Image 1 (spheres, rainbow over the protein chains, first blue to last red):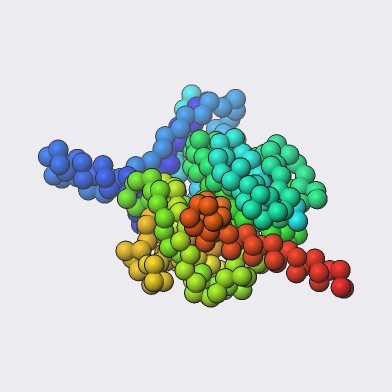
Image 2 (tube, rainbow over the protein chains, first blue to last red; image 1 turned 45 degrees about the vertical axis):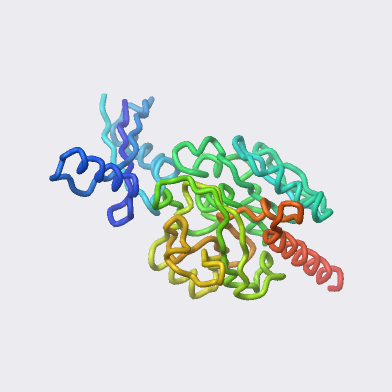
Length: 80
Length: 238
């Protein structure tokens, strides 16, 4: 089973990289761009085959290491 | 006194810290490899600056799970003095030994320059030889020094005098312009509630001897030494 994990800064926390990208997009003529948020994407191959257990495991990984929940939020999907 | 300087893969200010403690201040300072599990015989611990684990994932995120960090957690829990400088500060935050987190600098730039910091609390083992309100000129060298914490934690840091250093003008005024990286409340350094763990972004070990033209940073290490000596004297009298 494969976990696809997305980590972004929490809404309300300044994302200077997202802002810089937003400005660049505006400069390129994409005038309708708003609130660009930049994040990380991880793929993790799991041995686990049970959906429930895999979910618990990935959640623990995110809480413990992959995301810093003071500043970041995460979401993931499981496939395979 | 016996100081231990933790060496993670990618630490690069470890030798500077050892040099200051041993060659400048005449103490015993030893490197402690991150795979060590014991800190026996050491009286204070320094987590130096650098780029532990290449800053992968987040600064300090992987280093905080190094084997030695269990011993550092225990050392801190027992009241031992722990100083984290720059990446060392980031590791202490990730480890939960200090509250909050670091964001990318507001400017997105890696900033390497002298800044001024105001000593907001001189009644700590790390600042005991400073005057309250004293201004120190110390260099910073980081890309992720934009301190953040939630409003409740910030209020408690302020209420308990846990904000130890704030970025300021050379005259000691804490202004938005003097803030190099966007840190909340101009925070450059904080301590834990118990007072034995301190983290700061500026590098005092880079300006701790006369031949470098600036020894403002030395007072932090001398304060630690002074606090350790006083604690030892107290124990021997008791």
